[in-house]
Length: 314
Image (cartoon, rainbow, N blue to C red; front, side, top):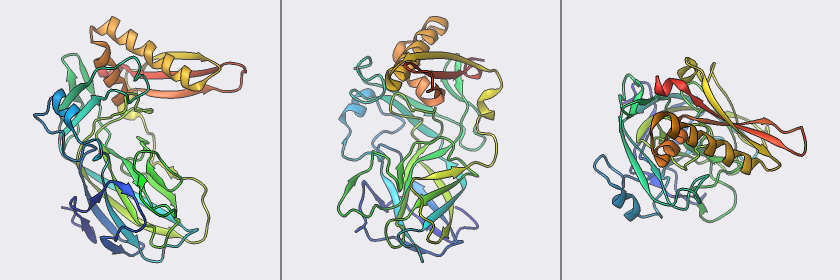
């Protein structure tokens, strides 16, 4: 339990869609801090003993629950909600899955797969994936956003200008997120917590993990913001940089095709060099490898690169 928090928002206060008619569970003054208890992206349907059969039997209408919303006193449309990410309290349990029909290479990986993680929630030492692979951890919240102005219920999955399912791995402890406010009170909710993820979350899942997150709120009045922005407290990849990277590329006139080619190339490299199955390599890429747009000016072809940290196989 957070010792310096003004509020605790329990996991029972969760919902599955953005809707500005949802009653807020707390009213928070600018400058105050709250701890949110977040359940995993399966809403607790995947547990330590789960199998692929459990993955396929889950209720798909209950995905990416978010805890909240909270009402920020004084917030109005046209303001910016400033969210300081103070800390995470990870659970030590997580899962990664290949879900048929979902992910960058869904057409190539049509069979379900599930990996259960048991990791060090306190020391956050690299988590065992396979006998020869350990993944450095960096907790963050994949989904954090305000309620949209449009009435009715809106799907939780697509990201929006008011935030939501951004899946930005650098929204970790110490970072500050700035979100446009569209409704009175902002009505912020948070969830989809991850123990680690690569840029792109290429198979569609990270290390999906229930955990607590502590946030401090502030307001910037009447300073319209078109899209979310954020700052980081320092370097963002120190936990991965120490041994360098293997990098594959995709080159062509379409960035999505380039991204697919770059990831497929890395999967081929990992399977050839480390004896891992293709689907295991795909899921591993999702939790620790980074997609980067390397070049978009030399028409007609662009370059997308996929960086895989060699420290994982050290």
